[in-house]
Image (tube, rainbow, N blue to C red; front, side, top):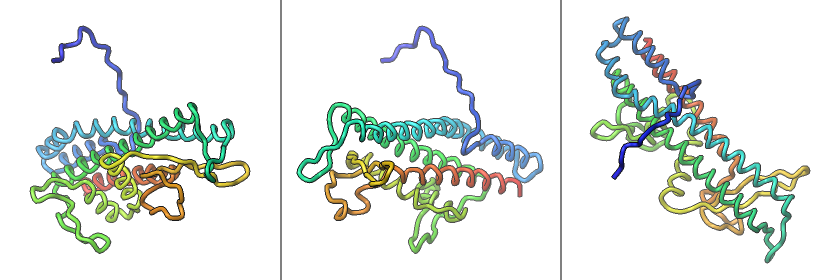
Length: 261
C-alpha cells in the first residue's frame, strides 16, 4: 500500500508550440459562445470534458519529440559502428557482433519500440479529443462510411469513437494521405501484441557509405523472398512524423473553422 510522500519537488511544465494545440480551440469556443453560434453551456461543457485530454496531448507532444530524437541518435550510433568495428562473413552472410553491437542493437530496438508506441498513443488522444469536440458541437461524422471501397464504422453503436477508422476517414476528408497511418498501426500492433523486433543493417553500397536499419518481424536471411509486411526501413518512420504533424494541424484548423461559421 502506498504511503504519502514526506516532501515533493514538482517539475515545472511550461507548454510551448504544439503540433495540436487546444488553446486556439478554447478561444474559438468562447468566441462562438459570445456570438451565439453555440450556447455558453456547451462551450463550458466541452472544456470540462476534454480539458484533461488536451493536457495529455500536450504531454504526448513532448514525448513524440523525445521518441524521434532517441531513434535518430540510436540510428546514428549504429551506423557509425559499422566501419569502426568491421564486418565479417559467416556462411556467406555479412555479420557484425560483439558486446558493443549487443548494446547498440538493444538500444536502437528500444528506440523503435518507443517511437511506434508514442506516436500511436498520441493518435488515440487526438481521435478522442477531435471526435468528442465535433460531437458536442453537432458536427460529428455519421457512423458508417465507404472508404476506399470498404465500409467502415467511425463510431460504435453507443456513439463512442473508433479511433483508427475515424482518423482514416478524417485523412480522406481533409485531403491527406493515410498510408503512414496504416504503416504505424500495423507494425505497432504486431510488436505490441504478437512479437518482438529483429534488426539488420542495409548497406546501400555507396561512396561515402550510407546505411538504413531494417526492422523485421522475424530473422530474415533472404530479403528477395520476404513478405513486404515482415520488415520495414527505419527511414520510413519519417513519413509517420510528417503525417502526424499534417493531420494534427489540419484537424485543429478544421475544428476552429467549424466554430467560426
